[in-house]
Amino acid sequence: MSVSPIRIFEGTVINVHLKGATVRLSTGTIAAVTEDEVEVNRPIYEEGLKSKQLLRFYVSGNPRRPVVVLEQSTDPGFTKAEPLSQVRTEVVPRSTAPPIRLINPEFEKKMDSYLRSVEGDASEGTIPLADIRQRYKRRRARRFEAQKEEP
Image (cartoon, rainbow, N blue to C red; front, side):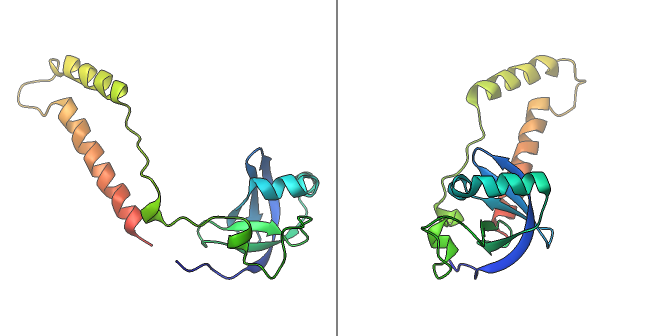
């Protein structure tokens, strides 16, 4: 997996929270700031949030999910010579990431029993509601899988 080169952009801080911060770059792209970076430079990020002033950031990572670090970072562990991906982020290819399970068995049982209970209200010759729901879920899962495979 290739890591994109480090670029410098200006941007404004639009959110600071416990797990990092969010920055809108001058290109309009939304970028993430790691928790470690915010902890080291919290006063700068909070002042940037209040004043909405433009700050300069090193931008690295996937162009669709960029990660930024202040150009004037006070972190002694950060140097311009090191690739940002090695200093701040760990790149995990999608193929090795564990799958996300969004299925709650208890909810599925309750939903199925509800659909079967209202099924008697449907007229004869119609498709059962539980089957319609299963078809919808399968169709949605196929679309999601297709989106994951696209680069």
